[in-house]
Amino acid sequence: MGDRDLWHSDAAGCRRVPGPQGSGVDEIISLRDVTKSFGSHTVLEGITFDIPRGATSAIMGPSGTGKSVLLKNIIGLLRPDRGEIWVNGEETVRMREKDLYRVRRSYGVLFQDGALFGSMNLFDNIAFPLREHTRKSEGEVRRITLEKAAMVGLLDHLKKFPGEVSGGMKKRAGFARALVMDPELVFFDEPDSGLDPVRVAYLDELVKKIQEETGATFVIITHNIPSVMRTADHVGVLFRSGLVRFGSKQEMLDDDNPIIRQFLSGKAAGPIGMDELATEDTDVERELVERAELRAREQVEQRKRERERDVLQV
Image (tube, rainbow, N blue to C red):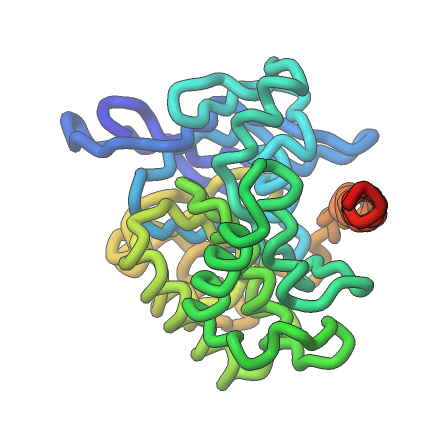
């Protein structure tokens, strides 16, 4: 964050607070005045903050406050109407698709439902990015896939298909796939969605352990406060299209802002009501998964044809 400012949304009844002077924080992602609307409805407005490198940052807020839309803007599935997004010193909003594709290869993403391909077993799901984006041999693909599967405790289930395993296993398979390219950045979109409290706690332990082991930057989109307390080093809160605050977890706990206090306490009385608009957009994610699954099927068919040709030549 250095000497840059953290902006607090006027719409949320908050203030502008300067970031710490000379903090020496090495940011991996910087957002400046990011604004996104769908039709006449503004989902994000003037979002400005920095995400520190090599730590876990969580973005929280009531349902429908644009958390997933923010994530999709950061990773380039959506483009903001205004503002800048910097990743590792490169501004991505105005990037050509070819360059954005290159930057995205340094990302791993775990979507809400794991986004697994139903036609592929867990091994092939985890291995998919290696086959899609690298020229590694099948032996190397197998070695890396087994290594990541072991990290999330799935070695005994790799022949199963997504429809044959629990929600927790799907999440872990999605997590392993997000890690398979050794990304510098890993994004999680509501990773606890659909899980019971025991499996959420297990996943949180896994997230914390793997972040510490890899030193990667983890960015988690969630509204699960206990999960954030277990995993995050830094926390941001969104409300009514604005950023209420982004800072260390302790700073968030000490903040007397009424929005933050109500959200953390879960009490009904306060500025957060029941009429917040649902703005999370899953169409882009669904289209991305369908496209990727089609490519995966085409790859499998191509490999079959290549093997058949090799056999005939022998």
